[in-house]
Amino acid sequence: MSNKRFIMDNDINDLRLWVLQRGFPSFRAKQVFDWFGKGIVDPERMTNLPQNIREALRDDFITDSFRVIDEKTSQKDGTKKWLFELHDGHRIETVLMRYSTGLSVCISSQAGCKMSCSFCASAKAGFGRDLSCGELLAQVAIPAMLVNERISRVVIMGIGEPFDNFEQLKLFFKRINDENGLNLGARHITVSTCGLIPQMIEFMCIGMQVNLSVSLHAPNDTLRRQLMPIAQRYPLKELIDACRQYVDKTGRRITFEYALLSGVNDSDEQARELAVLLRGIHCHINLIAANEFPGGLYKKSSKDRVKSFMSVLEKNKMTVTLRREMGSDIMAACGQLRRGMQETI
Ligand code: SF4
Image (tube, rainbow, N blue to C red; front, side):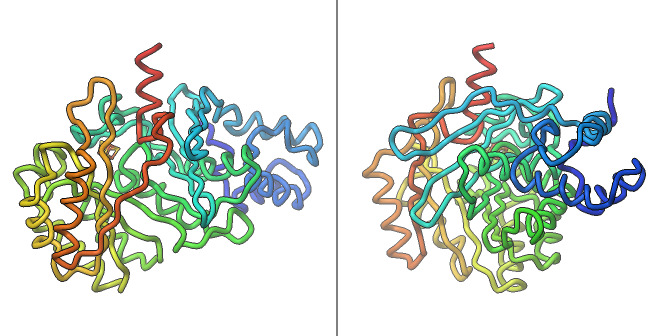
């Protein structure tokens, strides 16, 4: 197997070293790097480079990645979803959502996921491998290039558990901030975790302004263990303690994601239990209409149930929103397109 790196895994210093070793003029490093910011990874399209440098890039790095296997556009709200094939055949999804405040891209952190949440289409398709920092960056730069618009927010909520790929994630945080690269401030990035406590602690100690979102989906351990196997390793008490620490240490508000599953976690009683669990934490609860997918175990809650659940939380003085469903006509929810394609292969 080749030990070449994906071309976008190189930062500007790596490229400076590379041109030096290859005997090319030093200014070529910046030219290559600038193409990354434009979402170009194929040296053939780096039109200001002479042919010998394009060939050298192809020889030394992986450049034949991110083939578009499928592209869908929602007729309802303009959400776009791509299924990309990486050089080694793994497939990942990236979703672009259009809000009045700008474009937001939801990226995958792994090809597949090990966490096995019972309501998730990504989990059903199994785990492939971690994505590299460059593969995370490419999911921001390539969609921006494909639609020819600037991305203003990144959410790491696609396929995979980002904190299970923490080393690459940290590099991504550093690189996306680079003013010569994609130049997106940490406050415009949100990372979502199912609750890997050691990484959450390390994340809060890094001191970055990246927003944190925690997938909760249940107000008690018994139910959470049924829905999310990770809850067997990290009980709710420890998770909530870590969240309190995060808020105390960073002064930032934390978001809790809660997907409403009909007859499973959506009763008024469970809403009250959730309010008690989160009382006193500077937080925001984001309710999500659950994703239904073929072969899935759960149905989404009725509109009346959602309303009632929400109003119990509000009466208990919680800040709560219902996430707008984006791209529901194109299977825009995490893992659905990748899984759908696997089933049809
Ligand atoms: S919900 Fe997230 S953490 Fe859970 S299996 Fe799906 S991708 Fe993994």
